[in-house]
Image (cartoon, rainbow, N blue to C red; front, side, top):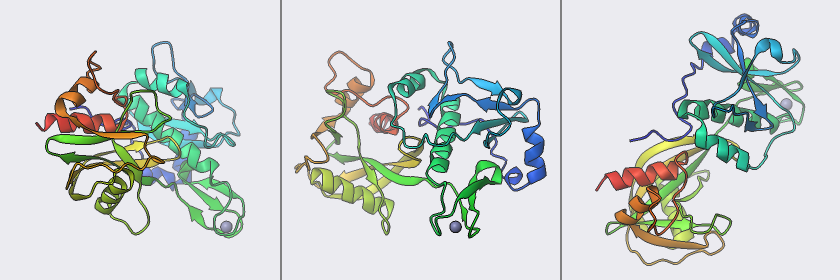
Length: 290
Ligand SMILES: [Zn+2]
């Protein structure tokens, strides 16, 4: 069973070095250091479909570098590019993710999420003053009031409702024709994972659910930094009342239909999400339960 996309980074995050200025400076001067090559927020990809790394000597001295971590004692960095925040995911990223090895996609996802966070936190949310990076790029500190800000991830539930051996899938009108996925939505303040799963399924498809079980999770580096929490919920009926503002369509599918979609079979009844999306993992886990 494949691990979810954007997981499995080989880097040691070395949290203890982030607060140790001398140790961090030593890594900034380590000749083995590598710096991730990016085009804006997109990864640079080699002819072999791998991430592109530069040596520390090749990058400008005044660049703000985030310490992504160590691998076999070798420091790995990514520069903070200002003004690139919120770029929509591009076809170039999708193409890159089709070829990047899983562990490299995980490194890229971490880097992208962090850069995106820095770009959105150049000013203090408490007093409006300018902020500067600290903790080796794993935080920002306000020049004026001293408040420390740390990278956040937003929890998102993504789930299948299950009823009588079938699961509920949906599609948004912006997606390529025929593509369906699991329903999803952001957790709101004051909600548990289970409550968010039940609320989202009811809001989007009009289906009440009972028991909710956790399946797996993945970090998702697009549109900020999200933690996708994949669940399966037991539906109390299969009668749909679709919110057409959220979904263009929703329907119930069998394990055979999900299997055919995952295999991209000629007779498939819908197009499945790509392997690096957790909905794909969720479909695979559900199919394997039979
Ligand atoms: Zn401040």
